[in-house]
Structure formats: C-alpha cells, structure tokens
Length: 483
Image (cartoon, rainbow, N blue to C red; front, side, top):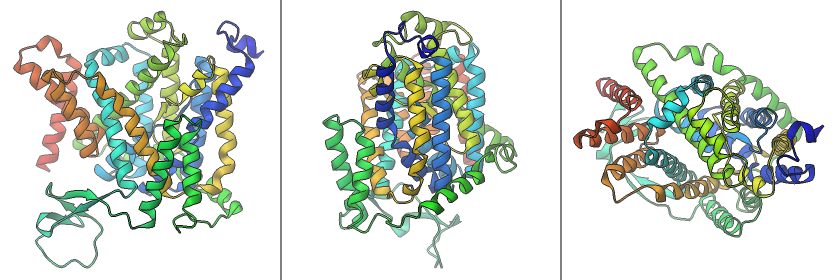
C-alpha cells in the first residue's frame, strides 16, 4: 500500500529510508514547539495553548504536504512570521493577538486564491530577484536582532531629554507614578550588556553550546541546545524547576480552548475593518506576510528540491508559467497556504516549509512518507507539555540569533557594487530589523527601487504591481503622519 500511494520505487527510495529521513527532520525542527510559545506568549497568548496549537498546525500542514503533494517537507509556524506577529503587528501596530490571528487566517485565504490563479506568478515575476534576496536577508537580520535583545546582550541608554512620551502621554519632564511604556527618539544609544546577570550569562553559555553543536553538524543541534541550556539554568536559578504534569496537561487543553477560533470571532478578523486607515494597514500587512511566506517556501523548494531531483525543470517551468496545482511545487505551496489558514484558526502564526527538512532529504527522504513520519513525531511531542513553562527565554534566544546568522547568506547574492540594486536592498533589510517591521522593510525597498528606476528613466523595469503596492505603502505612511 505504501509503495503504491507514495510511489517509493519511482522515487528510488524505501520505507526504511523514508522513516529514518522523517525522524531526522523531526529532530532537526522539534525545537519550534518550545520557541513558538515563548515568542507568541509575549503578546498575552497563553503559553500552553500556543504549544498545542503549534503542534496541531505542524501535524496538519505536514500531513497535507505528505499526503496531497507527496513531498518530503515539513511545515510549522515560521520563525520570521512569529516575530512579525509579535513585534510588528501586536507591539508595533497595536493590534490584539486575536486580531493578529485574524490576519494570519486572511493571509492563508488570500494565498490559497492567488496560488490557484495566475496572480501568484504575476507577483513572483513583479518583484526584482535581488529584492527577494534582500527580503530574506532582512528577515534574518530582524530575527537575529530580536534574539540579541531577548538574550539580554543589549542595553539601551535613554536620556531624559530624548523621551517623547510616557504611557502614551507627551512627556515634558513631569513626575510619573508608574511607567508602562516609554517612547524615545533616535538619540537612544544601544550598548553591550554587562554580563553579571544569571539569565544573560545563561544565554551566552547557551549560544556558545549552540555554536559548537551547529559547526560540528550534530543532528538536532537546536533541540539539544535548548535542553542542555535549560539544565544549566537550574543551578543558576534561571530555570523554573516546578513541574506539575497533570495540571500542565489540563492547562494545555484549557488554554487551547481559549485561543481556538479566536481569529474568526468578534474580537478577531471582524474587528479590524473599522476605518479606511485600518483597512489599508490590514491589506498591506497581509500582503507583506503573504509575500514573505511565498518567497520563503519557493526558496526552500528550489534550494533543496532541484539538486536532489525532487523537482524537475519541468516542475519549475509549470510553477512559474502554469495555473492551478499541476506541478509538485504548486501542490507544495497549496499545502503551505492551507496550513496557514489552519494556523490562524488553531491559534498560532503563519506556517512555512522548514529548511530543516533538508536534513531529512539528505538522509534520503524523497516522498510524502517522510512527512507523515514527521507529523507523527509532532503528534507524540504533546507529552512534552509540562516542559513548556520550564524552558527559560535564555535557552531559546540563541536559536533566534543562529537562525538569523544562517539567513545572512542571502546577502552574498546581492550585487552591492550596483547602487541601483544596493540602495533598495539595503533599506529593505535595514528597515526590517531596526524598525521592527517586515512590512516597513518591504515598503522602503519598493519605494527606493521605484525612485531610482524613475530617476534613471528605466520605467519598463517597474511592474504595475510594484507601482500599486508602493503607492498603498506611501498612503499608509501619510495616514500615520497625519494622525
């Protein structure tokens, strides 16, 4: 049955090879079940609930990939999108986590529509190739910056004269009883932290351990580093050693009930379209999330699938020029988009095809049976629920830094000696990290690209889609400035 369904012989593989490949992939990406709750819980979402939502989303998305697309890839909530969900949409734009989940669902729905039509290929062709790499590199820089801050490696000096507002009220030096938030101008100065706090020291130890594991190519390096750093945190007093297994499982399912379906509730999707300004922000945010996810998935497919023969040249040609989901790449993207829809409903951020699937592919995985094994691994990992509140931020922050570093290889593809490319590429990546917004990074890159091509009178190199999106971004900036 397995031979017939997954076409094992045609793909030159065996059940044993596929099982080992699936186990390899799961070990490589299992860390996400701890990292995702740690980041999303900062928005006020219940940690245990996000833990279960992460697992169920990974199971559903990976099963669709395996059973529908017959591909050896695994899906789970994206690290880049969890950062955008938390730091851009909730912290930056001021939306609630329920509304952010609504956006995630909307991204999935829109992606399903464009994936099944020629709109997808139009968007792919409209974005300059090197800006695609700048977007990927910028997300990496953004993730690494978040990791450095979460690890406690950076402090920020704020002089009283540079404070703009306190608790959202204009500050003129008046006394303040309590401080909930401070907005300061660009004179704020970052500096390296003094390594005299247990949590910061633990994060440094964890990062050193992770570096050692990664450079020596130890399988499951990320997951191992999380557990080892957590154990080291016990004598340092950073790790929470209180484990209540029974109550943890109860809390997991109870908390999941509190986030399930919130995306489609009255406080979610339907509460965001109150004014033209909010509608514009939602459209641009959904576009940015969808664009990032699309390029992320395509990059993973091309980077791992062409050299191994999983995708043929005909598959790639059909993907860029055809409609529907005739090629393997099309079906893989369909799985990704449906998984994001389910992610929003279940209660987590957008999914992506994890690059860690390359470890299973290197181990010989060639069909969807590999994905099915990964999905089983995620399902069984529910037993780790009691550990979610035990693992400290210092154990997960190093992963963000390392993932960001790994994404820096996208910079080498950019022609930095060509200023027509270098300027928009720089602003794309720099604004993503330092404005804490993937959307603003994409906006800056698009606007500067159009500006430069207009000055050079190279209008034929600017697609209509690029014009439309850039104008919408500019209208959003004008709206923010006026209000």
